[in-house]
Image (cartoon, protein in one colour):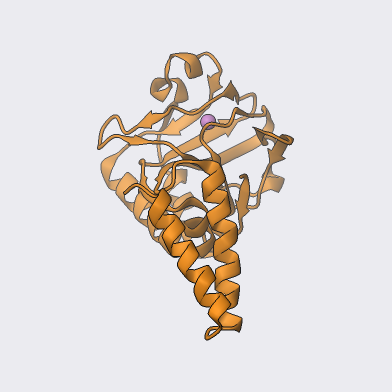
Length: 224
Ligand code: NI
């Protein structure tokens, strides 16, 4: 499932993140790339300075912790440290699949869900769409600053060349409690029906049945 999540960051969080990034050093993105990605990766990444990273991560993680749609769709168990990437004119990232195992510096984790959080006003740069292959064709995604897209980490994707301006994004990888994307999608939909029933017919026996089925499916399918 490819899902767009609006306003992951509010205006104040977005301004703070961009202010930190404005005064920061960026390095060649190839330095963090695996062997296959190195050949197609042409971007820059924020140099990981511990104090600055801690502040950026705190803003990101607290906004995601409060985001209902993110939590319901992704069922996050753990997250890798985000990467802040900058694409200037002429930069792109050719087709690739994200690394399966993340966390070189900290604890290791499996990437189930990838997230791109857009930080630049889409009117301020040309090109730079995130193009994701899905079973139903390709999707080109370019969102408002503060909005994000999540998609299975197993998807082939690329970033189209930025032809003018500058595209800044945060990239995040999540290990989900539920590894299988089809099961996650089913739980996401069932949870929407469950929440609707809980608010419109809280005492109804059907509500109880759907609520119990949802909880027990999560229990059946999750690893912690
Ligand atoms: Ni990628």
